[in-house]
Length: 139
Image (spheres, rainbow, N blue to C red):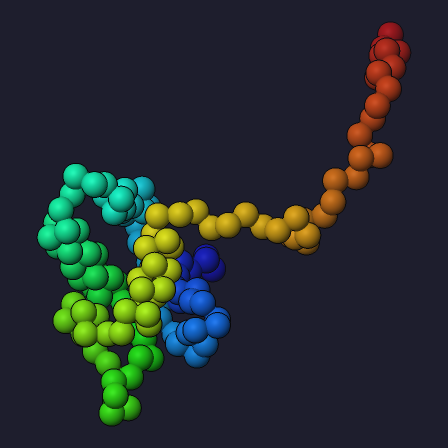
């Protein structure tokens, strides 16, 4: 039996402001990952405000297409649909960290394991021979 690849991933959201919020997004193929999303235009002074607004709208539309499920509710306690319009209607302080977590997941490699990681044993320095090997006694 083989390993089953995940096709849905839960976003890591800020614990101080988004505790309890769950957002599942679809996995990406390696081709999509390598293509990534170039967000360098955000700080480009040559791009007009209107162009940036259109690019952000495209980004939100792409995010909405990637969301499989979330537990965000509307003001009446019902589930909030995931659509470009519902995203544009959301509170910015609520939504910006969510979209940022999604965008970062798509364009960045996972953080390296911490120095104290226990995945694998420590290198046994004393197990590496330090003196030159003896000459062969072959006859």
